[in-house]
Length: 66
Image 1 (cartoon, rainbow, N blue to C red):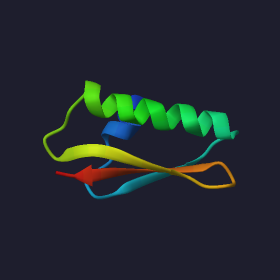
Image 2: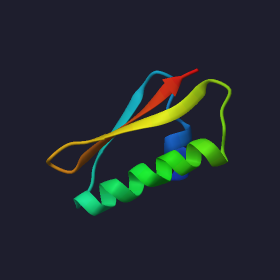
Image 3: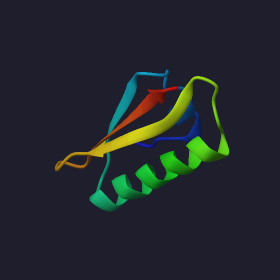
Image 4: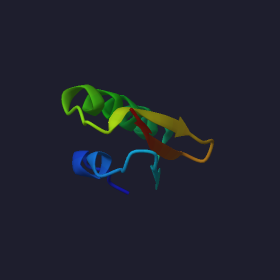
């Protein structure tokens, strides 16, 4: 599954997006990118993005409310 910048920015405050990726390295890369997006494209309703990577290479990105 391909996650874009707009996919991350569309996550509503307090909700999450879960995606199955091909490898742990892809998950790590997406996690870093989500943190960079939070700083590069600040939102009024989102403080930051929290990411959780499971053992089966699923990543959950949560938009933390301000």
